[in-house]
Length: 424
Image (cartoon, rainbow, N blue to C red; front, top):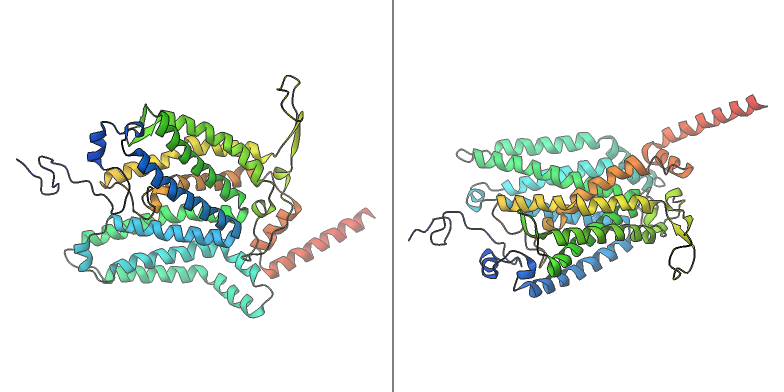
């Protein structure tokens, strides 16, 4: 009888599939015993569903509380998620034997991580930080210096990490160390690209973060339950438990939910107003034409149980339909990509931090794709339509220094005076 050295299973030439400690994924041997990968045929599906549902209730409750607390708390949540994702991905190629011979090498990964965090968020939020401390002269000067030298500071932090890496290179460990260096940079690109867009969405108005994130959650839950009860036709080989029934059911549910949720969220200024600084105070703004209702009269042949022949629709609801379409058809490919990635590394999930779900990266795969699209869609189709005097003023406040704002004020005064004298 042949036993492969990497397997531990008699007669199996391939490597053993590693299963993260604490994961609730169904092992391959159990799936084989069930006779099929589909959830409808899984004998332990109800136990798995209860564990997954329990975790989901806690996550949704915590998410709702953080949304209520506001922009800064949501940003802090994104940072925590980033740290968990980076930890899971750093560990993916980690080898304990090599690491024992490279003291401090793990610390280098986190040096690059926090340098990237300082660079990305410093560039994005610097002007909002300035707006927060405008009334305090000392802090205003201090923050002004930080903003002025932010890029060079980040560059020297990165160069310090680069030199640290070169000085720690050891003979016979070069390949492992360079592969870790490349892997670290790939992780930073993946994690910070999507999170930068996510944070930008948050400060443009919580609406543009909450709606896309909620649609992914709804799509995920709907796909699970439709597949759980009706799934019969496999969708894609990368994810054997995904079914066409789950995919189609979730798509319809997500698109309808997008239209309804946009109407519900669009009535709260706390969600629709952009945040101009890093304070936590209440928001009051003109939300713009996208959040002002338009009225439509229903035709006579419509069912009589409608209380009114006139319905109010927010223009943003039509945009929400497109976001729902993307969330239900395109964003799931982020999950398929993650499934293929895990198969390549022979793991069941990225971590075990969330019972029934795996790791934080397992939950964020589709969110990453959605966050980027939501930001690009907002900048391409929403911002040009939603311009108002208040929004133009916001751009001046956010992007110009105090001295530049004074120059604009004086120049605008001159233009108005010239036009006034010209008309008279």
